[in-house]
Length: 345
Image 1 (cartoon, one colour):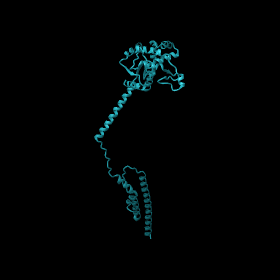
Image 2: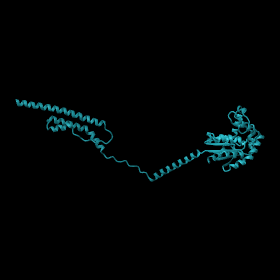
Image 3: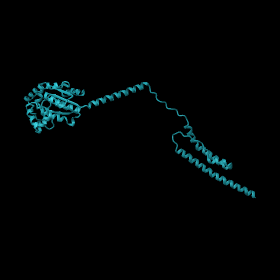
Image 4: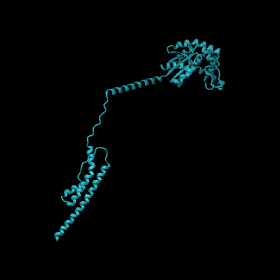
């Protein structure tokens, strides 16, 4: 009886041990599944290497050297669950271990390299050409344009300024501004202008020098109708003012007289019209036009005579930079020749 009680006690202890191992096995399965879940939740596309590790509880069970039928069955169940759960992981490791074929590098032939080099050389040459062109266009342009009265200097000056951005300086405009302002120099100049004679050098040179010293002349300037005599040219040279191009508009005298007599000025906007070649667009504009006091046939003839007497002497001072342009054509044709000359500077 005592032995049976002892056996019953042993059986009870075995049952207790089996229940404890069952609990351990359950906890082991939970840990394995949690570990697998965490592995799959953090899986990336990088190569994965997985090592199969036997469950710690199974190893512990084997070390005990006992466990009976129930503990062995429990361990077997856990092992099968581990195997099923880890199968995807082993598959990932198997696929990751495959050899990846290297991507072949493109082969560039000598013809392609030569073509690329040619394109690069052409682009470099174009960039150098543009740089030279840009540096050339930034050089200060100093130009004098001369011609008889009504030769078209004013029209060509407008086109030059618009194209090249130079500062237009007219000695005549400076004198007329002084006359309009009623200054001492202006009143003195008016006497000569009304007769068609040249204004004394000491009056004009001072005004021209002051105007050329203004900041807007830094890029370049276009001196219109000055110098008109050898004395004026000498005074300009002595003052250190030296142009790079001297343009001379050539027009026959009979055409010049016709242009002068029919010329009219709009005092509102400064537009110059001609009653035959460029009439005012409306009667209102025609009614307000004025005629310069020296635009009569008598005075115009005197001015032409003075011009021819002095022009040869002026040209002699600038013969190395002088270019003659036929001014007896349409204004656009005249400007085409002038534009070409300026671009060659």
